[in-house]
Structures are given as structure tokens and as C-alpha cells.
Length: 410
Image (cartoon, rainbow, N blue to C red; front, side):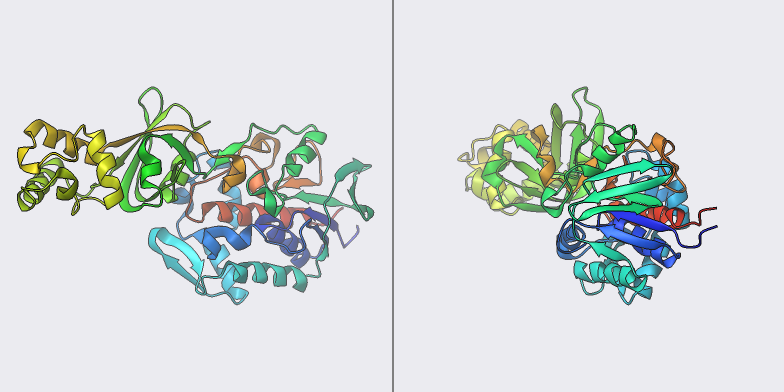
């Protein structure tokens, strides 16, 4: 029996750093390959630089926020879920706080504190970092050769944690899928997720407008509702972005053929909203409709909403027919947009699809076809909504892979 296992970790992101540090802490000799000069580049920009690292919820609630292969994560989350992740980072000297929606952030609001903590965790375990791209992985007689520009090195185990296709400038360009395919491991079709949506209609006229506490509902081509949530939405020159649009994208395939509706006044039922309209129109009874709606809507949205309701913005509000008022009410509750597609995968927060979970052990992340080969993080076909869930998946699967890969070889 050999005491010290040698482990190569490919990728220095959230899952790779967790896997490397865990394996080293568990006694392995670990080498981490990261093509960038610094580790954690994508992690450092998550949550607009604040790093929403997990969500303080139980496992069942967590899995309800994972649209693809949620049950595969049960074992990893049971071993290292949100409570363990929070204790882990606080033990590394990073105080945490919980905000709206149970989202967990560093008290400092600095994503770099999370990166620095993981880097220190790896350093404490003696992880050797090679800042080069791992170009090839081969296995022979139960050992792995990892090839990089500086040469070929032999390892007992290899953990692939090099991300998906999103944010390619941070180093994620699909290498992990190529490694999987080279071993005959199936990779499911990839697509952007948590990505802005392109839309026809008046979005460009409202470019830059941020709406808070609105409801976005999305229906597929058959009229089936696939998403409906309250939150924040941003209009852009190409369509819509912001938390609601990103979350909605996770429920959509290619993004085309969907209809979206915005409820500007979700807190008001029809009767209450109608009273509000009558009150505003009485207040501005001698004004044009464009002016009469200024207490009701942001300035840049007024013309678009009136147009969608079929109302001339120059019409005096005291001459507005009852049917037109009803049309305005309905538009305020369901302002229509036709979704024409998702933005490119390079703009996505995460990649949907990846290494087929049927090819992996859910407890260890080990490939069933290749003993000693592990996959974790975004490279695996598991993704979730916004709210800290995806980083938690990275930490949980990285932890599982690191523990398994560092176990002794008999």
C-alpha cells in the first residue's frame, strides 16, 4: 500500500480549487493546472464582484432550484451542502452574511476574499500550481499522463474541473468536454444558461430602464407557462437582462419561439389597479395620456405601454373610453414581448449541458468507465438558477471529487 496519492486537478476555478485543497488536506500530493496567471478569475467576477457563494436553504429546497439532473446532486449536497460551505469559509477567516432570498455573501462584499481563502486553503495543503494549459490526458496501466507545454507528468488520479463554455476569457473553452470524449464518455448538448434574452418590440426604446418588483412570465410556443417570478428586470438594446431574464433562460431551450409578459403592477389586482387608473386620470383629466401616466410608469416605458394598449399618447385622458382603460389595465399586467433567442454562450453565466451524469458516480464524481478520473463543477451536466446555487454545486462536487481522488490506493 502506497500512502501518498498523486492527484492532478485541471482548472483553478471554484470546483477545482475546492477539489485541490480537499485532496491535499486529505493527504494527497496535488498539482493544479490553471492556464491563467491567477486562479479563480471567473469566481472573482461572480455576483457583480460580490460573490453569492451559496444559498442558505435545505437540500429539498435547493434541488427545486436545479432544473437539470437535480437528484444526481443529492449525495454531494448531503455531504457538503450550504451549512458546511458557510462553516468552511468562516473557518478560513471570511465572515458571511445572508441577504434577501437566502443569498449568502462575504460581509466584505468582495469576491476576492473567497478566491483568496481558497488559494490559501490550497497553499496550506501544499498544492503545487502549474500555470499552463493541460493539453492532453492519457491513461496507461492505471496511471495518468497529463501533458502541458512544459512536459509530461504522471499521476494516480485526475480531476477535470475546467468549466464549460461561458465566459471564455476566464479560461473556459470546452477543454473538459474534449477530455471526456477522448475517454469515450458521453457529453450532452451544451447551450447558454443564465443569459440575457433577445426580444422583438420596444426594448431599445426603454434601453437602460431597470424595473424592480415586477413579474416576468414566459410561455413556450404551445402557450405552456415555463417561468413566472417576481424580481428585477433590465431593458437593453437587444432585449432584456437582469436577474429575472437570466433565471428565465434556464427554463428555455434555444430561446426562440417564446412569449414573455411583464406585470408592471403585480401587487394590485384588477379592481385596485382600475381604481388607481381612475384616480390618476381624474388628477390629470385635462392632460394627454402620456402625461397622465407619469405617476404610474417610468417615463421611458409610458409610450411603449400605451402603444401596446392601442392608445394614442396624445389623447386627453378625460376622453379615454372605458374599453381603452381596460386595455391599458390588461397591458400593465401583461406587457408583451416576443423572445427571439438567447444571447451567445460567451455572455452566459453558466453552461447548460456537459458530461452526462449517467457516466459519473454521484457520491464521488468518478467516471464509471475510467477508474481514477473525476469530473466536477460546470463541466458536468448540472445547472441551477441564480441565487448561489451554481457555486454551491461547484463546491459540493469539488469536495466530493477531492475526497474520493485522495483516498489511498490499495
